[in-house]
Length: 351
Image (cartoon, rainbow, N blue to C red; front, side, top):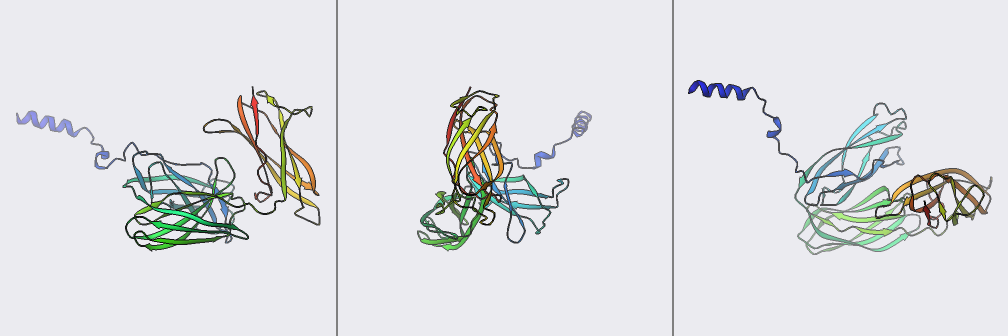
């Protein structure tokens, strides 16, 4: 009997025991993802490269924490990263089906950095924070800076490490996160109301922002606000139409045919008064209608307005799919700052 037991033991020893059994697995219900493969990247006044974006918790059951991101900063060759920086999300705990911004800065003000890649390294399941904070805006003013006043209300127990955030978004669909600002509130007593105030120099591409807050144990609602429009714009997009090669306006087009997306614009004054010229970039974005609009086409044309008054700009488009489409147009300067409000939206049927 002892020989049989010894043989069985030796046979079992021949089979490897997986080291995975010694680790606690992440529940299969968890799913965390970057909301965009192309985050917004810019250089600040000191020359540091800043990358901002959003991380989404797609789980309906579990909050997540300790979200770690790797930012690789490259030069134009893109062979090996010049720098690699580990970062995390603004929200310490991302609730179920929630989203949190992130901001990662390069370690140095390296002028050779031209692009950045972001990789999701890992995350952990977490107990949920309670939504006991409420933020609301009381006044929004745009002059040289964006000035936002508001009130934070703590509906729960005393809290510490409280911050209020502004997340800025541009006009693209879906909007891109292009900046984050924060103000520290600190300790807040139970049922206390605290005023907060922002006075921010903002990117001119920003057209909207979100207000939200978090503390050591609570988080808040998200408030969406529009940035007040500047009093004046250099250019007005007065009309958008689709034109065929003969100059005829179209209400329906066919897959594979070349059409011209044309905008009539009114130039109010020139940027360079000496040359009487206004350099611009014209964008046309075509989206297929649906619950989640699909971007069919984004066209870009660089040009120069000469003088003021009415002029036309255009981009060619060859439809690849049939259906109902929305066409949106934009005019920006060469620094990607809007010099016109978004043009009238045009609907077109592609057969």
